[in-house]
Length: 435
RNA sequence: UCCUGAGUAGCUCAAUGGUAGAGCGUUCGGCUGUUAACCGAAAUGUUGUAGGUUCGAGUCCUACCUCAGGAGCCA
Image 1 (cartoon, rainbow, N blue to C red):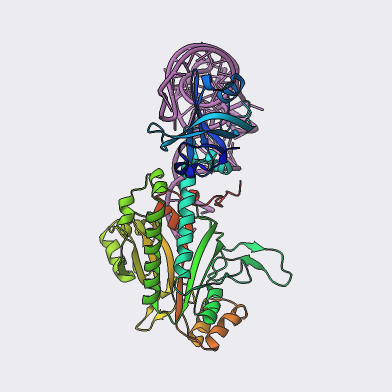
Image 2 (cartoon, rainbow, N blue to C red; image 1 turned 180 degrees about the vertical axis):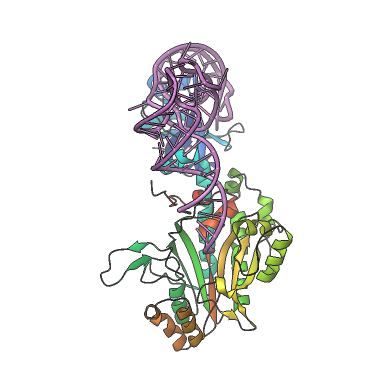
C-alpha cells in the first residue's frame, strides 16, 4: 500500500512511492512513452509511463485514456526540472475508475471556447486552472474579510433572506409567494436588520447572499451576489471610511501574501495591487463632478455617477477613491444629511482603481426619529412596515452607520477580471439560471 | 426596458447570390522527453426558427428565439 498524497504536497515526498487520485487533464504520447497529466483539485502533475517498465495491457490502457477520466496512479515521485510543477511521477501502476467515452468526449478541450459554451458548461469549466485560481482568491478574500472583522470587535449576526419590505424601493425585488398574510421578498441588503443588531452588539457584520431583480446586463452585475455589511453604533462618516479603507488594505495584503501563484495563473499585474496603500484618495461629490466635467463627462451636479464616470475617475489614480457627500435627493431614505449642508448626505462610495468602479457603498444613517419618519413619508413608503425600524430611534438612538461590499466586485478587481461572471461558482445573471 | 452586434461540424471560425471548408477534439496508424507536442489518414452538417424574394439563399428581406457588448439602476 503506497501513501496517498495530494499534488500540492508533492514537494514533501520526493523519492517516495506514492499514489495520487485524480482526473486526466491531458495526455501526450510519443511511441513507447506516455505523459499523462493528472489533476487532483489541489494541483497538476505530469506523470511518465514507459512501455518497457509496464505490463502491455496497462500501457495500452493508459495510452488510450480520454480527457477527464478518473484514475488512481501509483509510482515514484521525482524532482524534475523539465516538469512544469518541478515534480514528476514515474508510473508503476494505474487503477482506472472510469474511462470517459470516446463517443461523448469531455467537451472542454484545451483550445478556445466562446463564453456561451463555457457558461453552459460551468459545472465542468470549474475544473480548469483559471477558474480554480479565481475561486481560490475568492476564498482568501472572504476569509480575510471575516478575519478582519472578527479581530476588530465585530460580532457576526446574519440577517434574514426573506423580508417583508424593501430597503430601498420595491422595483428591484424578487417576490416570493409563500407567506399567507404578507408578500415576501428576497433580501437586497441586510442593512436595516444590521442597524438593529448594532444597537444590540455595538459592532456587527452580516455576510450572505443578496438578490436584485435589476434588468442590468453589464460586466458588473449579478442578480444573486454576496455582500458583507458591517454596521457600527456611535460611528460617524469618517469612522466608516476609516474602517472601509483598513479592511480593503487587509484583504489586498492577505491575497498578496497567500495567493501569488493564483494571481500569476490569472496573469494579474501584481504591481498594481502592491500600489494599494493608505491613505486612499478622498474626494467630495462636488469635486468629483468638477473633475469629471473637466475630463469630458456630461454629468451635472445632482446626478449619479455613471459607469463611464467611474472609469474616468479611477483611471486617474493607482489606489481606491472614496467619494462622499452625494446629493441627498439621489440617495436612500435612511441616509443622514450633512448637518452643515442639508442638500448632501453623509454617504460614501469606494471606487476600485483600473476602471473597476464601485465596490463599496455606505454611510451614516439617520438617527433622529422625527427626521426618519419624515423621510419615510416623503419616499412614499408604508410606515407600518418600518415600525420596528423606527423603534431603534425611540429607544436610545445614537449616530451610527456602516457599509456594504459586494464580494464579487472585489474579487473581479483583485483578480483583474473583465467580467463578474467568473467570480462565483454558479453565477446568476439576467437570463442565466442554469446550470 | 432601450441601443448595437452575432448565431455554419462537439468546439473556434472561413465560405462575390452558384458543389458546405479549415484548425482543434474524436477514431486508426507512426514516433522513448512531450510542454495547448508533432507527422499521416478517416468519420463528422436540418447553416438558430418560421416565412418571403430569386432560376438558385449560409449569404438578401420580415418576424421571432437565443447569446454577447453597452445604457439606465446599483454592490
